[in-house]
Length: 184
Image (cartoon, rainbow, N blue to C red; front, side):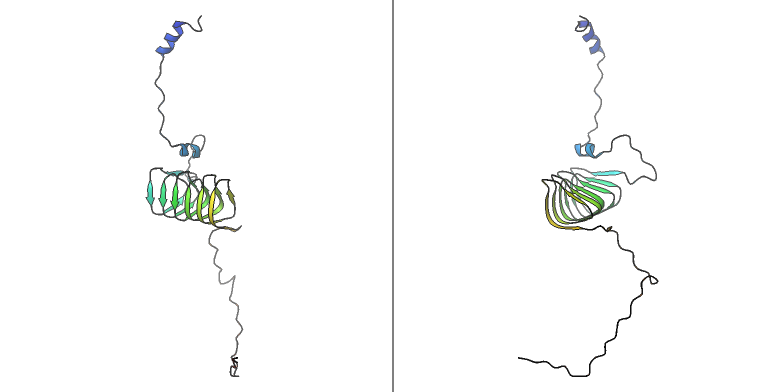
């Protein structure tokens, strides 16, 4: 009887604790957030992740280092040294240049990734893709041009004078004979 007795239920009701306070974090942020405690050092700031919220509508350009997750609407260009993720429901009109790009939302523009581009099942992409590796999942919509190259997208180094010297072009002497043309 001790298992279902009245005394136990009275004791448990006396020990009622308030429910823990939940932080209101969007589901996309929970999925994308790294597991475990954050470990940020002075040298390792490239693993920082920035979120542009679902209710934001931004016009402008973004550049810098670190990872970025877009949840809202963005009209402009991105130039990142890091990963960029376009979450489901997000809309981007502009060009993207990043180390890696993952698309779940809608993008209209050019995407250049030095490592990889992923078009997930809910992705809608219209424009140009430039990357050495690409993954297009079933259900993704892609309307545009794809350029795959093994080379890095970094600007090529300019040749110095010592390494490359212009060759002398042969000179061509004009002929002294009159030009003849025949009309038929």
